[in-house]
Structures are given as structure tokens and as C-alpha cells.
Image (cartoon, rainbow over all chains, first blue to last red; front, side):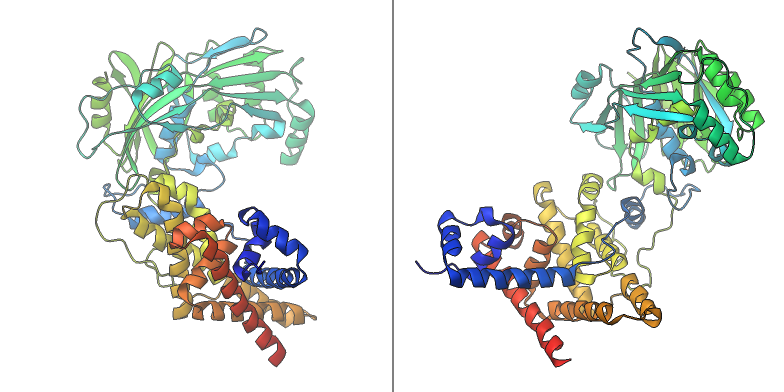
Amino acid sequence: MRHPTEGVLRRLVDEPAGVSDADRQHVADCPVCLAGLAAVRADAAAVGAALRSDDAVHPDPAAAWQRLSSALPARAATPAPAPARRRGGWLHRPAAAVLASVVVLSGAGVAAANDWLPIFRTEQVAPLEVSTADLVALPDLTAYGDVELTGDDGPHAVPDAATARAESGLDVPEVSALPEGVEGEPTYQVVGELSGVFTFSAAEAAEAAAATGEPLPPVPPGLDGSRVRLTAGPGVAAVWSQASGMPTLVVGRAVAPSASSSGVPFETVRDFLLSLPGLPDDVAAQLRTFTADGSTLPIPVPSDLVETSQSEVDGLPATVLESRDQALAAVVWVDDGVVTLVGGALGADEVLGVAGDLG
Amino acid sequence: MELVRSARPEAVLALPGAAHRGATGRVGGTDGGAVPRAASGPVRADLGEVFRAEYPRVVGVAARVLGSRDSAEDVAQDVFLSFARSSVPAGEARGWLSVAAAHTALNLLRSGRRRASREETAAAADDVVAPDVADAVVTLEERRRVRAALARLPRKQAVALVLRHSGMGYADVAAALDLSPGSVGTTVRRAESALRKELDHHASSD
């Protein structure tokens, strides 16, 4: 049998399954081909090493998308006064990210297990006005215990409203008349139920407090090891976008979040968390107004970027959020345990108009 | 509130455009990136989806050619801007983007407009202080030579080589370059043989 070509030997180096059995058998039994294979392998390795980049290429897709988006035509004339780069968390993001988070947040609370005492159910949306700096100063809960997330498989696109309904059990709101500048067909996204469990650890809390140089407030009896679970979802969203992929209108609906605790009453956990060092007094005071019967959904809103006001949608109290440059607006309201959001690169009048006409 | 935050709310709706709209891009900058500002025209609807799926791969292909992440990211911008206005079927996007990244990077390499990579800059800085830099210098020199030789290879060989070394399978390389699967090995082998000769030639003449 003739010897296989160098091309076959080359493939044998890194994709042997693509080489025929006959050729493989030949090479295995042929000293000439084995020597050739060794040479081919050595050349491949040497060239591969020379082409490799030592910094192993860790690209930054978020920054790259931002750069790409700014090179593509955009409808919105006025850019939001956004931080230039995503830094570490959503707290630094501009209004649109906050609005998006509201939709998600609003995914919601089902399935409290039997040993969980339902303590929180959203019936009303109340924006919490704090500055970005204050939010950043809030203690990270991971310093005070374990935070475990489940069901966090993120949103996924579905082909149509019917599929979105089937997967979430929620009707996707129908928009009868699109505002000016919003065109085309929406894409649909569904997110399943998300659940987060925080297990309080007195030892970790003491360490965290020591790190701030302040003493840990007395830990209420029974709090150590107690758990609080927040459940959110499912949710659906219809998203209209520009050709560049930038959303112009988002209509989302989700089962409102609920929280439940084991061990001690929710108020005890909440009040203790509020007393932790590092929490600004005024923020703590606002948080205390959130009642255990859960009539409010705290939406953290960076007050330096977003203005909030109260309005009504179909007779229900609603919260309007507007970015200070008026490039973005959203309205959020809760009806019978379901949160709905309408937001986009629109004015407050426009989002209220869409909200009022939802089918 | 922290609990609410712990539910990672931003996961639900990725609004990349909106979240980043205020930032300043470097597109069309003067730093050597071959990124033209996009002309007007329709932008394909699946751009965001394809971008998320393929961006790291595209950067990886360009980095094989250029040896620099910064330059590779410039190339990726260029490639996705072209893709944004193309009507390439979604199923062929990966191959198209990879080939485009290889060509664009090779063009940049040939034109010599590539930025000095951080890697090289850092290595040069190290040369000054490191007592035993001989090995590092040889490696760096080898890389420079191999890239110079890459720019001189027949284009199809160079692209096939880069795609293969970026992890693309033989069948995918064949489809992307309109080669028969059997000839991919031959093409890649020729390229490697030529580059290896280049390395050995310089090594023996030093």
C-alpha cells in the first residue's frame, strides 16, 4: 500500500478520528510513516507554540459590545450619562439596567416550602431613593453568611408569545399601538423561577464588622443559622429593538417576588441587617418602612441617575422612573401579585400611554 | 434589599446596548485599529446574539495572527461591523466570522500597522532587568519571525493554519474555506512546514 500523504499524517496528529482505519493501520505498522508523523507532529507543536499568545486572550465582550454599538447607527440622540464601563456590579449601571432589573426582580415568588413562613409578598412598588454611592456602601450579604442561588439559568429567548405563555404561565401583554420610533416585531424572553437563600452566620458577621472597625451589634437570639429565602419568577418580556440590537421598548410581566424565613421572624432578620455597620441611617430608615406583610417591593434606584414619581395605570398606583437626561423611562405597577413593567428609550408620557393600553 | 439583589436581577434581560449607550467607543481611533466607522444601512437583527456567541472565538483567531489582545479586539470590531451589515446565513456565521478575522488580521500584519503588543512591550521591559533573558528573547524572536513568515504564506494556507490552531475542526475549516476535507490537512501541513523552515533557518543562522 502506498504511504498516506502528509496531509493525512497531519490530521492524524490532532483529529485521528477523521482518518480512515486503513490509513491509521498503515501508519501504525510503517516505520517510514511513523517517522513522518513524528516530524509532522513536531512542526505542528512548534508552530502552535509560536502562534500562541501568552496572555491567553481574555477578551472583554461587554466593553466590546459597547464599542460596537456606538459605531452602529442609533436612534436615541442623547446618550445617557452612563458610567463608561461596567464595574463589578449592576449598581454602577445606568437607568436601563435598573429598569431591566425591575423586570427580573419581578419574577416571583411561588413555592414556599412548608417549613418556610411566607413573610413578604409584593403588592405595591415603592422606589427606594438612594444615591449610587450609598448603594455601593451597603454591606455585601456574602460577608454575613452564605448566599445560595438556585434556578438561576438566566433568561432565554422563545420564538413567540404563545411559547412565552406556555413556558411561564403568564400572558405576555399586548401592545396595541407602538410609540413613535418603535418598530417591527418584538422578541420574547422567558425567565424561570429564581431563588436565593441567605443563611446568616454570626461568626462571619462579627468578622465583617471587625474589618470595618466597628463592633457588631448584638445578634438576636436564634438569628445565627437562620435563613431567608427570596423567590422570584417566572417572568416574560417582549422586547422591541433597533436593528443594532439596542432595545427601544420592553414590556415585561412577572410574578412578584416573595420572601420567607426559617428560624426567626423576617422583621428580626431585616432589623438586624439594617443595624449593621456601613448602612446609612436614612437608607436604613427607609428600609424599615417595608412591612412584613410585604406590601412593597424595594427597587433600588440610583437617585443621581433616575427620578421617580407616582402615577396610576388602570386605577392602580404605579411608579414612574425617568432617567435624568430623559432618554429612558419606565412605569412599574403591581396587580394581584403580578408586576408589570413598560420601559424603553421613550418619554414618561409614552410609557404611560403604552401601559394604559396594554391588552 | 440585599436579598433582592442577590437574585441577580440583571440576568433576566440583557440590554447590552442600552446599558452601555453612554460610553465612549474607541472606534475609528488613531491607535492603529483598522476599524472604520460604520456607514449607514440596515443592521442584521441577530447581531447581538451572534456577537455574544462568537466574540471570544473571533478575538482568538485574530490573536493567533497578531499575538496581541488589543490588536485582536480591534480586528474583531472590524469584523463584526462588516458582519452587522451582511446577509450571511446565521448557520454560516461562525465560519464567516473566523475567516474574516483571519484575513483582516493577516492584512494588518502585512501592512505592519499592528500595535506593539503588551506582551512584547512587557517582555522588552523585562529584558532590561532579567539576568537570564536568553530563552525569553529567543521565543519572542521566534514569534516575530513566525508572524512575518505567516504574512508571506499563500493566503489560503495562512488562513487554514490559523483556523486550525484556533481550535476549528477539519470539517469546519473545509467548509469555511471551500476546501475538500481531505485537503485541509495538506494545506495546514504545508503552512507549518514553511513556518518551521523559517524558524530553523533563522535559528541555525544566528
